[in-house]
Image (tube, rainbow, N blue to C red; front, top):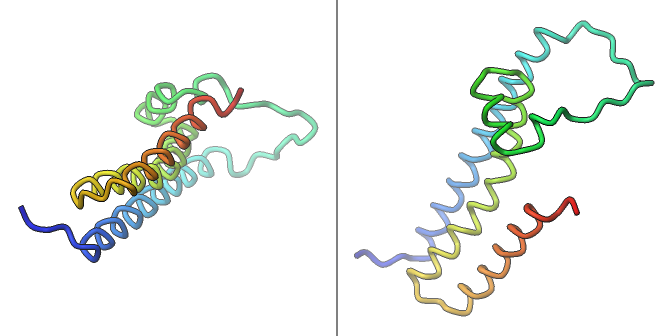
Length: 125
C-alpha cells in the first residue's frame, strides 16, 4: 500500500469539501429555481407564521420529498448535504489518521465526530 502523505490527504480533503459544497449549492439552486417558478409571484403573508410541515422534519421525509420532485424537498436535501460535508471531512480525517497510525489525532478527531453526531441527534432537546 502506498504511504499516505500529508499532501495527499490535504488534496483529498480539499476535493471532498469542494465537491460537497458545489453539489449542495447546485441542488439548492435547482430547488430554488423550481420553487420560484411556481411561487415567485405570490405575495408572502408575514402576519401568519407557518412552521415547516412534518414531512420536512425528518431525514427520510426530506429524501422522500426530494425524490418525489417536491421543490422544498430538493432545497432541504441540498441543505442536508451542505451540513453533511464537514461531517464527512471529520470522518475522512479519522480514516486518514488511522492509516497514518497517528493515535492521538484519531482519539481527538473521534471525540469531535461524536460531539457532532450527538448535537445533530439530540440538538433540538
